Amino acid sequence: MARIAVVTDSTSDIPDELVNELDIRVLPLDLRAGERLFSDTGDLDRQLFDQFIDETGEVPAAIEPTPDRFAELYRDLGHDHDGIISIHLSSRLSGTVQSAEAGREQLGGLPPVVVIDSRSTSMGLGFPVLRAAAMARTGADLARIERVTREAIDLTSMMLLLDTLEPMRRSGRVGWGAEVVGTILHLKPILRIEEGVVVPFRRTRSHWRALAELVDLVRDFPRIDRLAVISNDGQPYVEEFMSALGGRVPAERVIFSRFSAALSSIFGPGALGVAVYEGEATGLTSFAGD
Image (cartoon, rainbow, N blue to C red):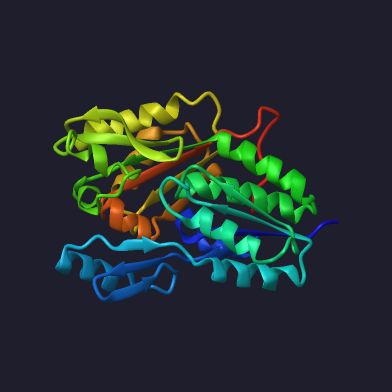
């Protein structure tokens, strides 16, 4: 049996209990706001962080881990693993994939490291990571885990409903939708991550209409193996969304999660994210807790 380590970054939004159960290594991004530097970890005081953003009006710049940090982690994991699969947020949204690749180059091929661009973020990244980690736990080799991970990326969709587009507009970041916000600033759009970038998908004039359309989008998937609902501090839209969705997805197939500080600062406090993992046609996928 092969021992393969699974690495991701803090924007994957995987709940801590699953991270711990599946032994996933999460490398945090840093957040720079003015003279302050925050680390996007579970230890971050989110109340203090959100207060700082409210008071300054700044959208912190997310800074990917350096190649040296990746190389150090890979070396440490190489002591007791046969290989590493490192899966990260879209290379069109961040330089994290490129930094991971540069870190891998410092190792000279040992241990073998596969770096994968998820072309997504939040649980759009998290589901492929969970699939990789579940496969790693079975003793699968690196090549098989890579193949399954890439399949999971193709089977995962990530959608967003934002309460306000102002943080995205202020961020000015190409790829995160800032370049199109001016045309939809006064609407309530449903956004989707397509080919690694955030794009408008549906446009409505009220939050409730947008929520209803988001529910319809989820209902229209021919197969849903897992659903993730991501928010900030379980804001009330989560309950409303789940109530409107009804029994489309069994409760045991739903993961509730929280946006990382890096994503929350761009998507805003009232953001609601929904990730759909369609799964393989052969049946329900094995994740932790099944």
